[in-house]
Every structure is written in structure tokens, then in C-alpha cells.
Length: 313
Image (cartoon, rainbow, N blue to C red; front, side, top):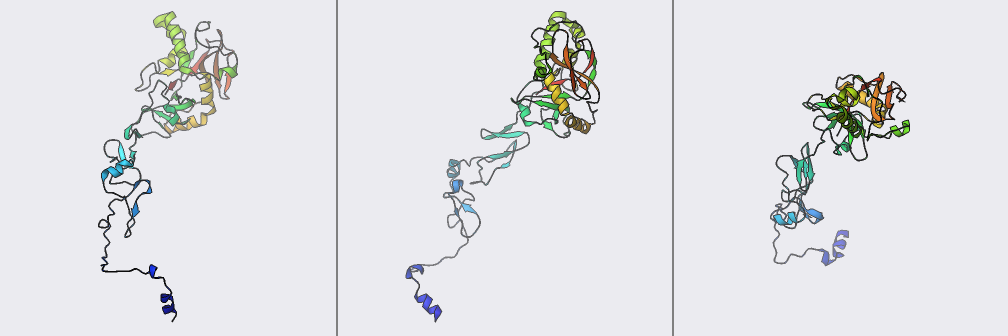
């Protein structure tokens, strides 16, 4: 018979030999030494009676040796990352507002409004800047919106436009080249200026040194921005935008207006003129004319134009 022929042709080495032995059936993986549910570096073996993998040892130090040492519990923790070894994880998933850093979920450092922190790298042009330094596409419940992101530098520092346009004022009432304030004779050069707050600081310091408490009367635009204090942001945080920042705002006016509409604020860019903090010379300062985004500087600093402040973050 064919079957008999096959059996006879089978090598004896392939047939299990049981001599004085007992065959014990079991489906208990732990009894067989498979005690762990996951293993680092692929060094585990799979229980023949299930889908779980087991580490070579059940000792806690074996898992820790390969980085499985976090229980991922406590304030700021959401869950463990990946599969655990001996109920420990190699890293953890952190709750909102926290980040995995140096082996722990730590409070995420937010932006400090009014100074450059590099946090703007987490934001996008046109997003809403909130009081806690976060950025969002829509209003966040319980969090106060303060501006719209209009500029993000290569260093991760950003500037956000105020949610409102301030009244028309003059840039200054005197014809003088403000000390320490750079001059930009051409529009092309002016549009490379993004140093809104440094410009504003120079104007404020010069006018205060010269006119004391009456300085705001002589350099109204810069002081208007400097003294702007919506809601919970104190005075001294806002600046008169540099020409490059205003240009960036105009280029992204649609994104900015979308966010303003979501916040039930008045959209901008319909008409008017905006002062920049970029000076041309002793007689003129650069301003942006809307609509159309036309830059001008032929009118004297005493001309009445609008102020729309920006804040660094």
C-alpha cells in the first residue's frame, strides 16, 4: 500500500521517540516559564498556546535594563507608550499641556506674551493667539484670545496683531531723526524690518528722555501702541509694528480676517492707513495704505493714520 510505503520510507530521526517519558498536556503558559507579556529588542519567545510574547526572565530588573521603567501615572500622564514589559513602559504619553522630557511628563513651556520665547514655532500665520500663549484655529472655551498671528521668524519668535484697530493719530509732532532708530530710504529696505518692539522701545525711550510725562503728546503712535492694554495684558507689552510685519499682515489678510470673524471681531483691511515704526528720515515714516497694500512715506509724520499694535511671543 502507498501509505505503508511512505511510512516505511520515513527517516527514523523524524519520528518522535518516547522512552520512559510521559506526555503532559497543558495550556498554562506561566507553567512553561512564559511570564512576561512583552519583551525589549525582540528577545522574547512566544507562548505556543497564545498570542502573547514572554521575556526571558520575569525579574523586574530585566525590563528596566532595556528601558522599561515608567509606570506612566500621576499628574500630566495620559498612558504608557507602546507595549509594557512587567507592567512598565519605555516612555509615556502625556496629557494635554505636558510633554515627555528627560524621562517625565513635564508642564509644557508656553509663550510669554510681550517677549520672544521661540514658542511661535508651534503656531501658524492667521491662527488665534490666546492669553496662555497657545495658538488655535478657533476660540478655546475658557481661554481669552488676544491677537492674530501675523509673523513668525526663523528663530521661532512671533508677533500677533491686536484684535482691534485704534484711532487715527500722528506719528510725531516734531521733525527730527529719532536717535538709535534705523533709517530705511527705500521701500525694499523698509520691508526687511521686522523689529517692531525694538523700534518702539527706541521711540519711547527717546521721547521720554526729552519730554518726560508729556512724551505721549509728541510721539503719539508709538505711545498709543505701548499703552494698549486689552483685558488682562498690562501696559508696555504691545508695539508699533515694523514695516515688514505690516506687509506680512497684508499678504495674509484673508487668513487674519477668517480668525477675526470666528471671534466675532470686525475684519480689517477695508480702508485706511496704518503707521509702521520704520522711519525713513527726519521728515517721513513708512505707512501702509489700504486697500491695495500701497506703501507711502511722502506725507509728514504729523499726518493722522491708524495704529494697530502687535505683541511679541
